[in-house]
Amino acid sequence: MLIRILVPMAIIGLLACGGAEAVAPSQPAVWVQRELRFVGPDYLSPEIRDSGEPLALTPTSNEQLYTQVVFVLRQLGARSIIRDMRGCWRAGARPCVAMTFKVLAPNGADGAAGESPIDAHWQPVQMGGDCALLQEATRTIVPLFSAKNIKLIPVSTCEKINVGLRADVLKPSQEEVAAR
Image (cartoon, rainbow, N blue to C red):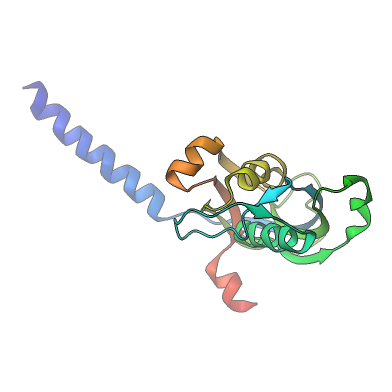
């Protein structure tokens, strides 16, 4: 008798969860400016990608770090990225990048006033690659975005599953992207 009640309830619950994720409600958001100064580890992999293959560690330059950080910013939804290395003189010998860029923030949020709102929605982002860089990006870059469900993935776990960054970020709706 109990199984006859629980099985249909479980099925209804699964269907409700699946339907809720399928239609992500849109919300008004505006583009706001952010600044970043990112000092990388001494050794990084040559690139970040979501192919799943392990990468060998090699020394990196400011250019390589810049390419990696720009990739992370774009995957999280940044636009209008402008490089400004003036903030990196204190990094010493470690690779460093500094830049400004725009991110979406919910309309009415702190610092999110002035521009015309656009339709946006929450979108999951998952990246693999250089685990140390992605762990640091989760701590320092992701908080600059409107993000939720942020998962700080330990380097040891990242190296096993090749996923180093997970979060839901606010991105423009498809209609807004097509209109651009």
